[in-house]
Length: 145
Image (cartoon, rainbow, N blue to C red; front, side):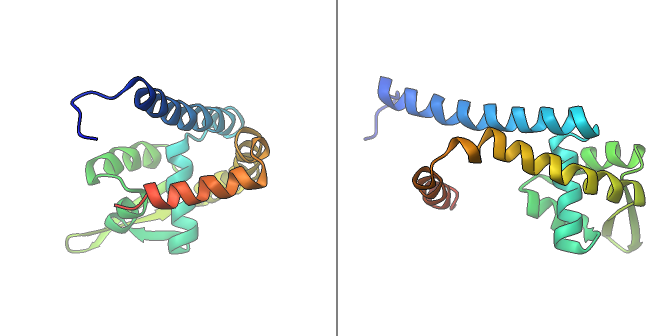
C-alpha cells in the first residue's frame, strides 16, 4: 500500500504503538525520578557504563550503545558530570572516556531494584506469557534496520 495518507486503521495502530511506549516509559521514569532523582537518561547512561564497560566506556561507544547522536550524549554527560555522577577524560588524543563516579555507582545500585519493580508493574505484570512472546517477536522484527 503506497498511499499518501494513513488509513483510519493504520493511524489507530500507529497512535496505539506510540501511546503504549510513551505511557510505559513515562511511568517507569517517574518512579525512578521520584525515588532516586535519576532521569531515565541518567539511568541508561549509568547502566551501560556498569554493564558494558565495567564502569568506563569511550564516549562514542556509549553513544552507539544508546542509539544517540554525539551531541545529545554530550549534553547529557555535561548535566551528569555537574551532578557528580560521571567524569570525562581525554587522555588519548581525539578519544573521550566516560567513567562512573562513586556517587554514580551508589545511585545506580539504589535505582536498579526500583527500575526492575517499575518495569514489572507497568509492563511485565500486565502481559500474559503469550503476549510477552509476541512483544519480543514484534520488537525483534520492527527493531531491525
